Length: 383
Ligand code: MG
Image (cartoon, rainbow, N blue to C red; front, side, top):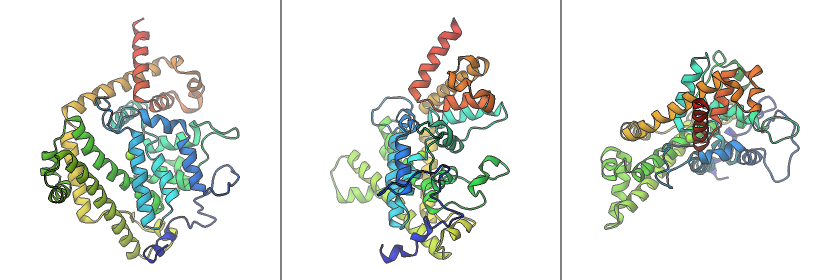
């Protein structure tokens, strides 16, 4: 460990007996050469819900290009960024990797449109859908890989990070999360995941947006300052090279600028309050992982641009409408015909309630599987 990082490493996993991030609900014999968090990485990668990320929308539901990101390829990009940041900050890279691997595991089919539709359906039953809470249900209950217990038996550090990586929850709102220290901030490894996620998708969505034909490079250069600046640098060094290659390299540079900024700003924040223990990171009222004011304003400008030009474009709005329609119709069908649910789900209705069980079933589906179910249900209804 070099001197630069020496005062940061303690912020990672130095929990004491009362705050042990490596604690599991069920005893698991240690394995030589495997850290607790590396084992969690393996458990997550081997989960069925993780494999289904390959069939879930990131932004584009249509299969118009083989090069669009899925939730799985997006997840791999987040892992790369999270590990780099964790390494530079002297944090626990295995914990950061496990949290990045699992961060989107609770997403339903059809991206945010699917999540919105499921949430609207549940609201009519006095419930809500939240992908972080759903991710916790997946790793604690739905995955069946062990003879002795349900769930993946992940460490406390990973389960806490699933809940807290992108937002704070209160015990008043979510009494079932009382065991996750909701009044305290999560470790830095969890704090950085949401920002690594932002860096990954802000870069990828410009790329996929151009691939789709909905965004144009010249327009992005004019309206996204950070990308425009990176593009000018690349153009100055590689005169005469095709625009597409200059754009690709500019995207890479933009990702590097944001990643370097996250590392430097977080490091400065940690030093500014003398956070030399996990306890101090937890006790600080604000999250210490952040961008500088300049990078934050550039991030916000790019996000606004993506909302205005891509996420709310006519083409994606039509995809979203169709997705919401499919989710809502299927939800309503199984609410009125619960016997049509698979037997394993029917068994859970008594303890979980019908609406939650239907939402759990739908949330687990890939884009192609839900469309198959939709076609079958339409045939059933017509009969
Ligand atoms: Mg994500």
